[in-house]
Image: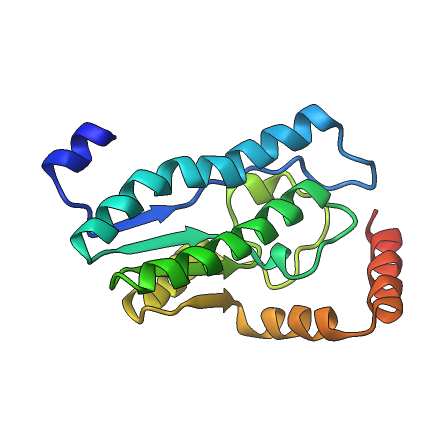
Length: 183
């Protein structure tokens, strides 16, 4: 990667790393949790670090990180995935404000469920499940418009953001009730 960066300039970099342990109501074991964290968070940083440093040096460029709506509400069925995606939100916020000092953009994109091999493993009904082409159009829109954060589908995002603002006893009640129904 370093050799490539020394000879060329990358205008835009998209970090779309993501794996999941699947959904269930078990406490994730350490080894699996670490594997998820290593790919979803540390893997993103390993990719972004040298590119962003070069962009800052050149005072131009755009880094896009794909997080997830699962970062807004940590479902009891996806502790590892939700926490890694929430970590990416904080990571993007930090980098966005650092990079802005050097005319570099950092965009955090938070999609909901997209029909992919990762979601195909899910055995539960996924609200607002999107076709891949639709999601790609939304991602392209967010990048073209330099959205700092872009969460979609909009209605699902609003529902989750509203739930996240509720008092904990209400939010916990809803999450536990839903988990019991689904799993």
